Image 1 (cartoon, one colour):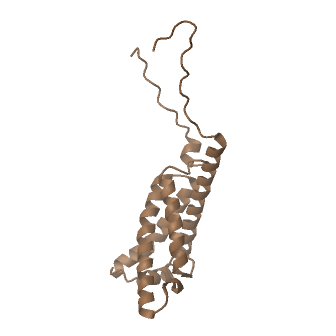
Image 2: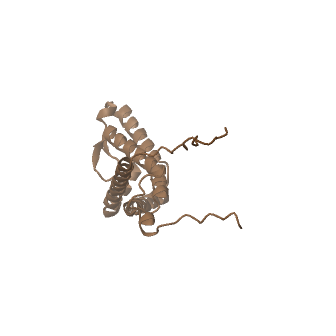
Image 3: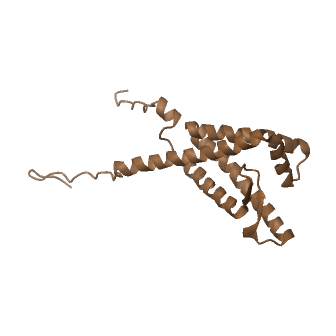
Length: 188
């Protein structure tokens, strides 16, 4: 379309930007979610570290079909890995990678807990919602329905963090202000 004198050019489309307040609130909610997930894993790992023999006994109750050396390795390393992941989340270091690792732990653990609860419900004739046992997470004996809901919530938090939430107050983004690479000029 040609513009004749006296006419002005059509206005350029402006990008739609969310209000700054909403973005800031979402950033803080993501930080709180990251801290909650981190604190939960610091707590769970710490409880297991304080009583490794009890944790080994609980791992054996799941009847995973693994021999003693593997059960010992799981019982010895898992609590430290949980503690380490929790501390990384609290500090905001490698948030997406840590959240992915936690997701890869939460899903199989939830399936194993569900399998054991279904077996207890079947063999003891207890309604599923009334099944209680110490799942080894550090909270003692719990209703398994509640534990599975808790794991589902933690899984959702991990998925949200994997998608890039929780960067505010993250160690990497707070200390190292990365600037974008300069654009190449057309004269080059």
